[in-house]
Length: 155
Image (cartoon, rainbow, N blue to C red; front, side):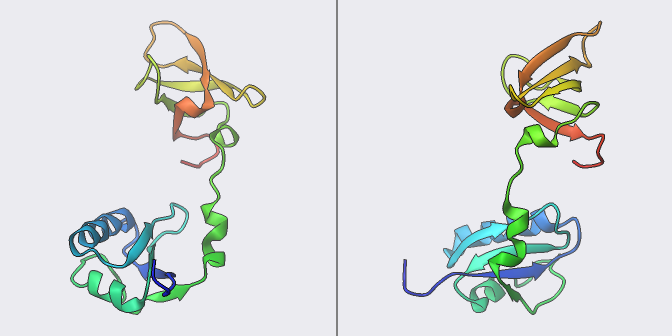
């Protein structure tokens, strides 16, 4: 790593196109071997992607001709401004009774169901499988589920 330090820049995009722009940038970085350390999209921050690079000129060269970039002036930002969005919450804290989840590991991978109980002490959720002919509650580790829809209005 050289003496020049990486800085964080915000790029304004069309709302809903953040991931697409990030993928295009990723492809260009691989092709040109640019001096970019990371590309970040935050689900809570709509209309922006964040790029960690050595300088603005590197990013300006990369974003040329990308359709969903809204404005050319790239905004340098401090990591402290987005740090509260970077802390990942444990899945067990986000789950609640009534949520629809998909099992992501084990023999029941891909099956969906409704959460009927959350045991935070054991880090387990009890899920009633939606594809079963009769109510079939099973307990799985909270790490093995993904929220599809939430009663809280999240995901």
